[in-house]
Image (cartoon, rainbow, N blue to C red):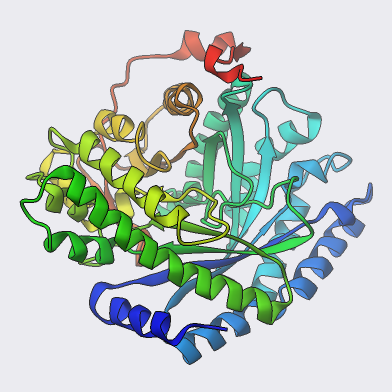
Length: 450
């Protein structure tokens, strides 16, 4: 049962501080759907998803109405498709089945058109990566991910090479949407199996048949809390963030357990990630500026973000029996009004964003790049971001969007929660010979922890 005091505290944060549940994501295993016949496999996938998730949207709306908690997105994640499509030459048929299932159930997005290629690629992995431009340009709600590196395995440069070329082709195929198809693809290092946030969500092979995972977002709550400790030492700032993160995570725990009960599914995890939106008052950059920066991206930004991310994790982990996913601070360039304005002022560049990813939850997220960027340069950026994740034993990802016909200094409008993004300049020095080497960058010594 829900504690009435928690409900009242939640309502105050919603009314005054823009708190929301960013997503309820129902993870569904597709391992029982395996078939060597493509049509039969697609049909089984559609039937499994629509049966398991038939009440997901209705349950989310019920909880919104009854408890006044905004739930922005209802989503589905599934088993990485490459794991079940080994006998299918072109897995695009599965992407279409996923899209039909997403529309039938009414969810906003479905994730899991994915491959786990951190140590090597199977034929199914290669086929899925090769199909990404077609699959993501021809579907509306399907999201994809490729894990190309891990601290234990190192970096698969062959997989990175294929991903960079897929991103370039996908951008061209969706040129009429300013390359937006690329916003539905994340290239990961150290991907987690229970991430509820798109575009990188998938239901990992270590998960059960199904589970309810919830992602909570509260940049506005944290910003308002920090206004109460202006001028206080950094350790007091950290304590204030921890207390606030605890309260926000309790909201996620409340919603997740209630959704799981109504769906008859196991409760998976709560992911406390400060996921911003383009709206005023809902920005991670503004939190960093409240900590004391003149502008996000200026000197001190990495230290302030490290403080924020660590305190969020410490506070959140005490508030739920199962904290998972990514849990920290997201810095998607196009989806954070403070980040957008900082980039427009010149305070944020690609290199500074890369530095920030050393200490934040994810990585280079929703980064708009010049349309004439080469596939090799995209590969090199992916490799740099993977290296940060591998060496620091953390999850990093890259969602890169080359925008056809646009150059550095232009702006692209994606709309809605995806916001707008200034096109960042890229140092176009060639990495062609580096990418052409292929092979695998070995795991760091820190990966040997037996």
